[in-house]
Image (cartoon, rainbow, N blue to C red; front, top):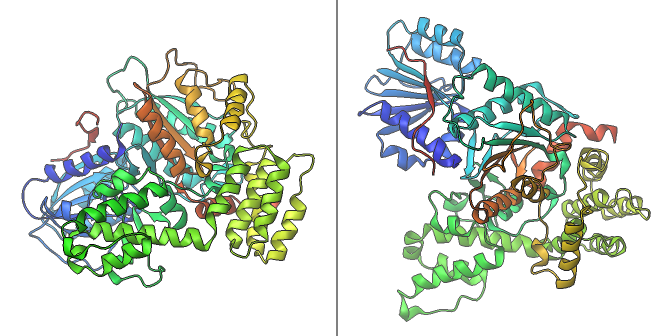
Length: 570
């Protein structure tokens, strides 16, 4: 179950099916992002695609020597654009691929518009989601719910994205959902309706153990997206922001023109692929090793690389080195900026207290540490508010809860009202009243013993002791111990065997920390394959936007075959 491979297969097949000759790829805003995640422009150029255009672009030239490959979402808007296009065709022949199920009436409208008979075929290729990592997908939807209920447009888009994912992986799953979330039940029902309605599409070869789709709600774990991260991919997203594999570095002091925006893609960057799940300390030394390998070729000018600053100077002083190692200069810049932010914002100390708030149960120590950091001028208002949010979630019902005092400390620190209001919004969004699970205190004897032993041994790395709640959920699911009274099946059927193919979807967004959990479970659990998806992939900033958008604060390698359905008219 590899989502990057699945989408890549679709794009390859579209280009192959159009035959030899020069081509234009005609896309919409969303499919442009979908394709760019799995193919670089230069890779597609090698397949005779010489032009990339948007269907909504008004001033496209007439180029009758080009074939058009159209890859579009099946929206009313796109169908209207296609109808206009076919009435006055700019290209010689059209191969039309919709990223999801298209209605018969829309196909009829396109047929009527095609008076010049330029359409060679119309097909459905279910690449209707953003493939982030092989085991992680997103729908790039921020703000999917209003209060506790779905925004209807986003429910529709999420249903389409999730059913397309199932079709692209050729899975017809049994469905379980988080009982405490009305949104999870609603999405489960919508996905089931599509599977029932389009039953012919979902007729795949039966496996001995049916696949399982588990639908969860972000409200059940509001802690994970609030924490600073220390593995490479997660840290880059937390501190710099990753948008469809692109990182904006334009605000980095003294940045050169060619590094203002960089792409980090494991598909095309070996260093990133090998280091994306490693922690920050290892990455620094790995970059150093990589650069020292290059330096060996220049024995006369041996120089020591002790710090990130030395590395940056080294790269800038060797234009020819820069040429042969664009990758290295990119990563040195990214790691250099991460390093600067960690030091400037005192993040090692902040993160240590965050981890204590997320993982330990010592109220007086936690309170003391939060108060101490709120007095520290290096701690930004963003990080100060985040610490108070974590405290508010963990010690919400503690007998010595000191939230009013901390709120006063935030005000005295000059933290803006926007962030202060978000503290109560977070509790409203993911507090004890809302959660279907106990996020902080383990209930069963095994978990209590584990926590006790962990306390005795001490922690290997204080910055990464937290494990997302998803880890426990999946661990129970894999062992067949996930409680049906908390995560019921939709419909009468239940799974007798332990699941093997698991698709987890988080309403309200997943995180890179959870993606790392899934990556590790896939590596260490033979016979189990897990794919994680979310309405988006959050860092703390986008998660707080999600909470604001909900409005709650106002109340205080698979088989290479490609699943496709042809609606061809030849």
